[in-house]
Length: 514
Image 1: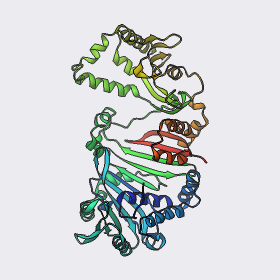
Image 2 (image 1 turned 30 degrees about the horizontal axis):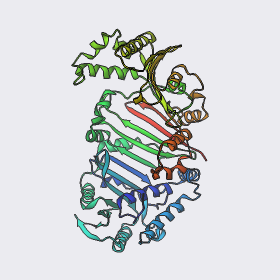
Image 3 (image 1 turned 60 degrees about the vertical axis):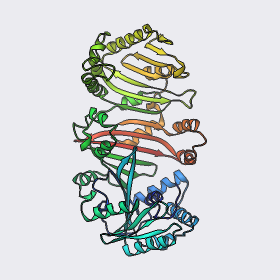
Image 4 (image 1 turned 120 degrees about the vertical axis):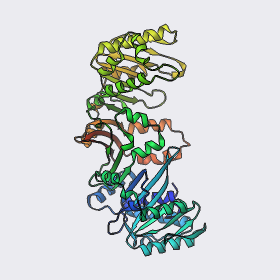
């Protein structure tokens, strides 16, 4: 992301705010709510500290040393900002021109979702001296290579123009940047009438932010889903009423980790709970990524009930699905109710040996075995080429074809496990536990310890995942290759979740090493 003139090109300004939050460059200011300039219909609102102190400051500096080899992160960020402005022909002396008026916090709010991307951002930065901030805006506008024009709306002055056509001005104690004149007017209207800060669910959700965070984000899940629509039915099937769902994410730095906490009001039924850590830990130890969930059978049963009731357009009419399956000789309801946990893992170091599987545990192994045996028989009778029955302790079948690539699609069961995977040895390892498991990996153990009392449900082994990415990502993807030196510091990613009353919780921890 190229840094141009600070505060005038909107996307670079977002990066500017983010870097300041990391560096801790802000001064002191009285606390005021940045959400007062955000539209009440904002979908996402991110607020960050510009001056973390104490343990947070020390942890951020420690992370910077481990990830980027930077001893003084604040000085490093400022030097980059000044160099960028100088390269654009409009020098900025940060210490003299910005820091004297820079406050404690900054925020950005997105008002819409278009083509699956958040749009219409409004940025707000607290100021300790609004007059000095406005003077900086006017001075930069005069010096800009691309003309700006002066504007006024409801008594508030602003500058609009530049290569991106953005508007910037001071509203109360906040420096505000928006996409165009209309965006700035939306911010003015919010500050003068109803804003995001006036929404009861916003205040209630933000109250669940984690102590010690340096950045918090409010997400209107219902609004996002309503504008995207693609995830609507999936959420309803999982017991979530999307129109009522909101969430807050909190960023908490540590000396050797970055933690992201989520707390969500999901609406509808009680949030899902359960502990799938035993399933996750039992998956193959050579996996670069693995995830697990408990109570999968209950959700599967709900989905099947809905499909049976509504039918599958062009294939099956209402109430024909279960009837058709029962004619094959097994009870789909009985199978769904017997399923307990589900796990999914992927392994490999490149295209030549990439594989993985979905693994299910069941309380009725005989019913699962019967279903798989019947399906395999029907597939072979249909004349599908490349179908072979499994031999050995596992029962089932696998299918080879040119479309599938060098490895077969495998459907198998052994004991209380069922697996559907790509690659025969990989799938069998998911069934039998042959070889080391994830639970035996030092990095996995560190991930479990980092989550504390939160049961682990997802794990990514950093070095192994990076090696695979380096083997698959083409040289033309310069952004990825520029990030590789920093990605090398990631030891693991740990994911866990649970519930607190009627709220769902989740935690993501990125472990960082030298």
